[in-house]
Image (tube, rainbow, N blue to C red; front, side):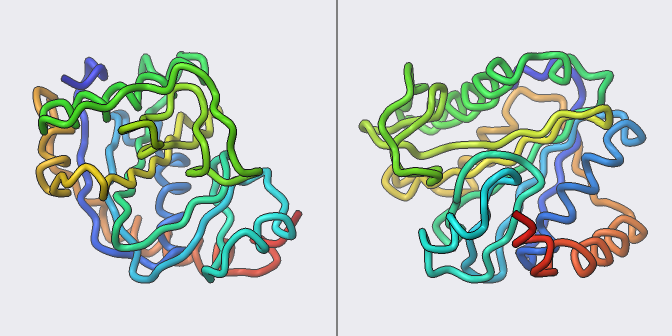
Length: 226
């Protein structure tokens, strides 16, 4: 089912602190070339929180939600609220991977078509948004952008990207409570027909991500830098 066409490493992580989750994704991007394969990471949050896009202004997003901490992502996009009802994933591709060469709109469409097909395997019909729908300023799940995933007219999946010489990072959020689908069933469907292998990062990666979280993502100066 997956359009990757290459082997995929799958990291099923535990619930993590907001700062650590962002640090882990950034570190995956930094090490994408050395890893040599695409990595799909499923993870959750040890507390309700909100994240916002790298290029957004803190003063603007801070009045849109009461959730704290409010943390800046390494990717673009808008404000996203994270709680027990959200399914979070990230995808990282090395520069040698065909997805790294895609234009931003193409990789965005491809990842949401992958998610759509997983829902289809779970007997839930969703579709890609054909055109941008009116939205609240800077809020990811108010309205919908082109190629977001919608269910019964409402957006249930969005993503943000960052592409550089290290690789391509996609951070995705699925808010599918209305579909009634079980999280485990959806994860299984995401991996159907793919050449995947379970992967756990080495202790050195965990330690480095912990340091990056403390020095960057847990620091107010970083989150409020603009």
